[in-house]
Amino acid sequence: MNHPVRAFLFRHYWWITTLVVLAAIPLIITVSRPDTVTGTLLRFAFGALGVVYFVQKQKLEEVQLFERLFTRFNERYAVLNDNLQAVRSGTVQDSAEVRRVLDDYFNLCAEEYLFFEQGESCPRSGGRGAGVCPPTWNAM
Image (cartoon, rainbow, N blue to C red; front, side):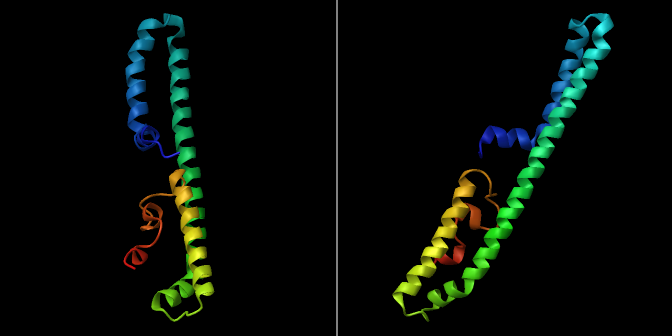
């Protein structure tokens, strides 16, 4: 999901984790028994590293998913492009053919928009994700 808090945390996790660790060190030293301070600090440090690893892994998986979706959508737009240009220029006279081409196009736009709404597609992906359809069609 494309939640603003999640986006903020994923964008700024390095400094947030660093601040939490730096704030927790004096607290751990103050509250812990002297013989357990080292172990507690190590457990806390490894926990913080685990959080950093999780966030990086999650971001990597999301980038890979976005890349696969972006590639697949571009391939499908490329397949539709000649027919769309023919419809746009008015060279296709058969209304059933025009309807089929536009149905295919808008179905693809709707599928891409669904992924965008679920946060799987980046809004800065060249105009398609945020605006669903390429800008040339908005002028028609």
